[in-house]
Length: 305
Image (cartoon, rainbow, N blue to C red; front, side, top):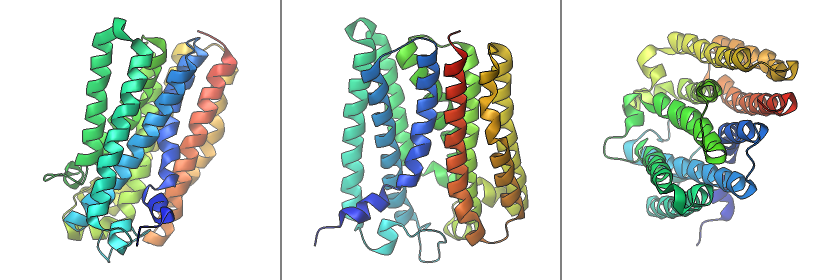
């Protein structure tokens, strides 16, 4: 019997897609607010980000089933292969499909953005796209998965932060002010915060599977201190960006999210069981999305540079 579309929808992990759209959308919104408008590139960039995130989720499902992290002892939501609802071979075919879809969407995006006249930029962004695809697959689904060596945080910071925000800005603006790297750092650190909650929740099953994430290496208490550093660093980078580019009080609109980040940090710090951490994962994702919306809206309301 063919696998239900609902099973595939769950395997795509829809609640993670908002985060992928958020960081790319931040770069696009900042460029749009600075007067660089190209709606087809805007929409295709968002589509490519969604496809890459789905690819990452499917590859993670496939890879963890190979290496034992998604065993029956794993806490949190069951994965598609782990639960037996999708075969390993079917998941492998789905990964290949989303590699192809991501490549087509990414190629269309950079060609529309730069055209034949910017061939070197097309090639540069194709290399970045290839790196993003490699990162999505190699996290858990390669012979030497870097996610098992504790390098997942660095990859998320780079691809959900620096590459997502700065790359999206450049696709519209064809230039990159250095100050844009500050909101890119914010997006990256908050995205790592989401991953960190996930890894604190799964610390015991990851340790048994030989998956040496940052919480496994640091231990639960220091992993919670690390979470505070991620939240504080993300907010500090956003404040520094506003300080360097200040034009209007509207740019401080994102401060409305401060109580939500504080609440998340305190709840993670006080948590004792995986069951307590699972809802905090969703809350951190939604808070990051709200941060991006308010940060971008404040930039737009403040007017051009």
